[in-house]
Image (cartoon, rainbow, N blue to C red; front, side, top):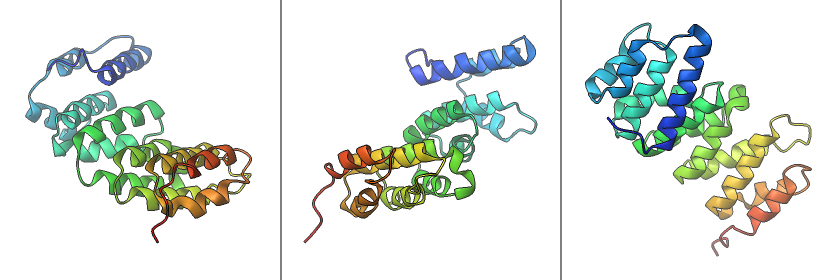
Length: 201
């Protein structure tokens, strides 16, 4: 399978090589084999076999995901919720290309899980890209929780403000207006408000 023209795949592989070299100093032959694997059944086997390293899961899930294989869905959602933001980026990229109808619901659940708010940035951005029915309600919920001026997760709130502006749904108006006084969100909220569609009569 050839991914030389896929920048996200190349970036993932470079990152994983560096991680492996930092951990063990030697790239295992299984890594190089997995990069050449074109068989979806073998890739799925990597996802289901016990005691597989994280790098193997990530490669297999990504390749299956961009190929549209729904068996990658659960693994990609777990990676979307990973503490490492680079893994979240890779997972989000593959989930968009997977096109699984469950993706928006999973992204909304991750974004609105207050116990995992520190890792909500990529699920929020994914909701904006998906433009699904779940996107706007979930983004409004997350933004409203980020409105206290001392909230430490203001970057998540900023991503919500920008996403709601991009989606242009008039249901976001009250939440965006509430964000106007916020010292970090106000300017972006003002810009996003200008992008909303008029409310229905």
